Length: 556
Image (cartoon, rainbow, N blue to C red; front, side, top):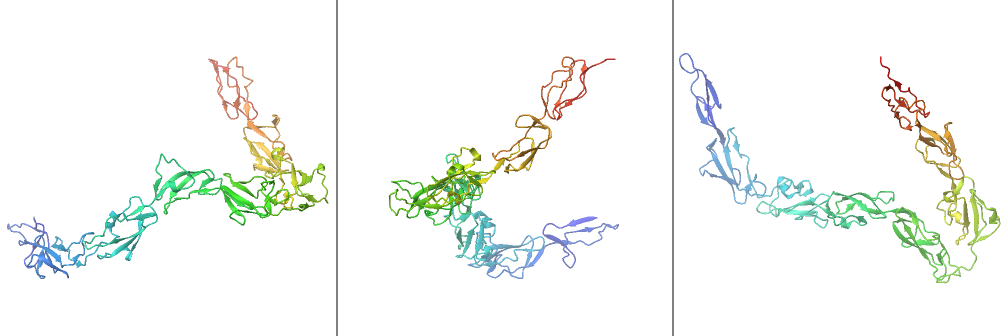
C-alpha cells in the first residue's frame, strides 16, 4: 500500500473537482498496477475578497474583487482612505493599513477588518494597566470607559477611596481625586502619567500621640497600621479611662489616622447651685484637662475669705476618669465680711430643723433637739447605724476609722441646705470575701453585704486552718459579714503535708528521705543494699504515709 500526501498549502484533487484531502492510499495489484488513478496536488483557495468601505487594495495593484485568494501565494495590502484608521489598531496607535491572506484552513485572515475614524482605546482595556488605574479607579465616564474615544474627547476618571491621581509619587488629600484623559489625533491620550496612588498619612498630624520621631518615618500609606501609644489622659479610639494606652491606628482615606488618641471622659459634670461651667449653661461631659466653674452674681466660692472673695474655681478631669476640685466645689452667697463687687448677704442663712436619716443616729454629745433652727456653719455629729458605714467619698470626713468609718458630720451649707440632702452619708457595709487558694465558698462573690453567711470548705488535697492557726475538721466552715466590715471566721486552706514515715527503721534498711511530702506527691523509698521494697508511698489527706518497710533480701 502506498500513502501519498501533499505539501503545506496544497490538497489532492480528483478528475473533475477538488476533493479537498491532504493524503490518500493506493494499493498495488497483481497486474503491477495501482487500484486508483493518480491525483494531482493543487493550492488551497479561500474564495474572493473585496476591500471594505473607506479602503482599497494597494498591493497588488491589479487586484479585483472577483479574484481568488490562494494559500501561500496571495497576500493583499489594504490601505484605509485619508482620515481613517484600521479598527483593530493596537491601543495607542493609528494603523492605516492591514494585510489579508488565505490560511491553511481555507479562511481569509482579516476578512472582517474595517476602516474607521481615528480613536483612543477604551480606558477599561489593558492599555491603562500601565497607568496603574486597575483596581484603584472606581468610576469612568462617559459610558463607563468601555468604548473608544474620538480625538479631542476626554475620559473622566475618578479614583477610589484612599487614592489620588495625576503625576504624583506620594499622594495627599490635596491631590485630585477626579481627572481627565484627553484623546489626541495620534490615537493616544495626552499623558501617560495618569495614576491613582494611595494617599499618605503623617503621624505628625495625630495629636496626643507618642512615637520616636528619630527612629522612623512619620509617613505611612493608606490602610497601613501603626502600633500607637497615647499620652497620659488619652486612649486609642476610646474615651473610657479603662481602655489601654496603646493600640493600632489605621491610615484612613482622608489622610488621617483613625481612630486616633481620644481624651479620657469623666462623664457628666453638673455644676453646683448658683454656678455654671464657663462656655456652658447646663450639665456637660468633661474630658481630660481642666474647666472653670463660675459662681453667679452675688455668690462666691464656698470657703472664700477676704480680700480675694474668689467667685471661680477649677475642676480637673484626671487620667483615672474622675473629676476633682478644691474645697467643697460649691458657691455660697457673698456675705458682708467678704468685701468686693456685688451685693452681700446680711441676713442669717438658715437650714431649719434637722431630721435624722434612717441609716444614722445622732451622737449623745451632739446636743441635738428636733426643734432647733440650724444656721449656716452649724454642724451635727452622727454615727451610721449597725450594718452601715460612711460612704468612702463623703466630703469633709477625717477617716480615722479607715475604710469602715462609722462617724461623720453633717452641716448647714451656705445655700441653706444640709449636706446630706445632696450626698448620701451611710451605705450598706460590704465585706471583702475574695477566694483564697484552695478555698471553695458559697456564695462565690468577692464581696458580700452585712449579715451574709458564707459557707467555706477546702479543695481535695488541702486542709483547713482557722485564724488562730489550728486545724479545722468540721466542714463546711461558716463565716458572717460583721459590722467591722470584715468576715468573722475566714478560712485558710493549705496543702496537706506528710512527715517522715515513723514506722521505718532508717538505721537499718531504708535510705534517708525528704522530711516533708505534699499531698499527691509520691514518696520514693530507696532500700539500702541487700534490702528490698516494691511499693511507692502516697501522701494522703490524713497527713500519713503507709507501706511496708524495707526488708532484707533472702537468698535461697
